[in-house]
Picture 1 (tube, helix red, strand yellow):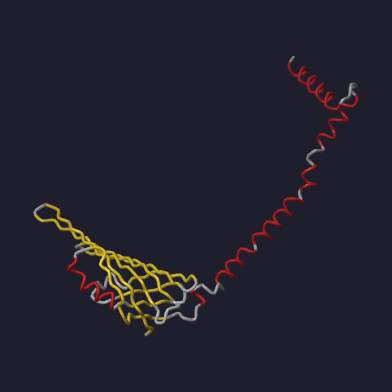
Picture 2 (tube, rainbow, N blue to C red):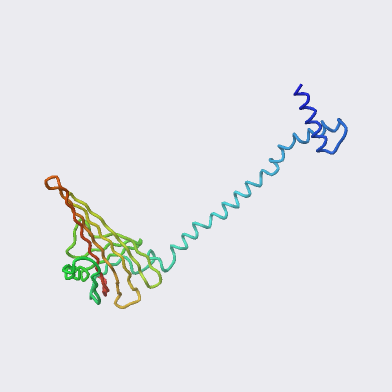
Length: 216
């Protein structure tokens, strides 16, 4: 009894939608409705044109990256690099953190600092009287106008403990001689077990300064 009732109901709905009152237009109206799937084939070219437009808009992005590589401020196109800079004069020294008794040795490290800048935006830093398993430090730099900014870090560990170092600073490319301001932070941790008791200690030092540098 339910199936005939459903069929009559669907037929009435179709007639109401088409605005007709006789049964004859029902079949005629049902056939155009079945032809509706042909509509997507007509609009099918639209997605392909949209995809090509999207690809066309995405294409300029590699060109923009190539343009940024040619930026005169980029270290990759600077004629100054590769180059090695050594401290020629310490104009200012600062001890920021750690045992004040370490200051003379720290000042000596500032005076013997050496930077080697490569053309690809990387550099290495080293100085005197430092751990050879920790130095040289390796990092990156970037040039903005006449200011070169750099940062580097390193870490080392052995059976007795671990150590780390961080370096940040800037170089004034317009100064003659060129001037570097930098800060070096070093730290070390030590641990041991004696008579089933664990002992640990840690030290941190921070120092830096302003120096004039020369190539060579």
